[in-house]
Amino acid sequence: MKSAVTISLVSEARGGPFVFWDDLEAGMAKAAALGFDAVEVFAPGPELIAPSVVQPLLAKHNLKLAAVGTGAGWVKHKLRLTSPDAGERSKAIQFVRGIIDAGGPMGAPAIIGSMQGSWGKAGGGDVDKDQALAWLAEALAELSGHAKTQHGVKLIYEPLNRYETNLVNDVASGVKLIQQVSQISAEAGANLTLLADLFHMNIEEADIARAIRAGGHHIGHVHLADSNRRPAGLGHTNFAPIAEALRQIGYTGYISAEAFSYPDADAAAKHTIDVYRSVFA
Image (cartoon, rainbow, N blue to C red):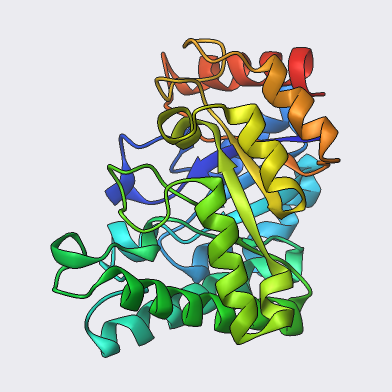
């Protein structure tokens, strides 16, 4: 398992669960100094994470790009893959495609979380759950297929807690969604993987370690935060059984810190790398 830390360049997301903010190179320099293997970047659009911008910085600081986030599609541009408006759904797909095309040449998969939207009134209309899931599966099939054929990278889908979406809240439901995508395109379904976010799982899963074991090979990325979304070690989550479950399923991906900059960014990053080394490495 490898370590990563988040850097957000999205001003509209300020106050959210990202460790470093605003300055890509400064965040990389601090990540490298602490010994992280990679960074995970959230940008307002693909232009700020283009290979011409990011690759020289990665090389300079001897880092990998673990993943690229698409959350700005919602928090900045208000785009959702399950919008009742077909034009908005098309724009959402194009936004994600742009992020895939930026990160893909550097081997970085895109993460779809908040852009998945919701159903019913929470989703901005009277769309029922089955229709919203159908639209989501169709979008994921298209985008996962694009990521695979154009760049040879995975697409990461993130189940969120009930306060952020009413579509897919746990690993088991995420596996069912992958199966739904596979019915549209077997290749796209095989290329779609789940993000196990330990903060969301703390809310939705009765047993995080058991859920990870059940998710098995579908688990393709891990977000590390404590029960209160502060950095690992500053809440009440017991990470030892979680790390053991990841070992049992043969997980070798990133353990990426998506947590509040508490009490500040430098301390948050230090807390995270210490827990990573003592529990996950």
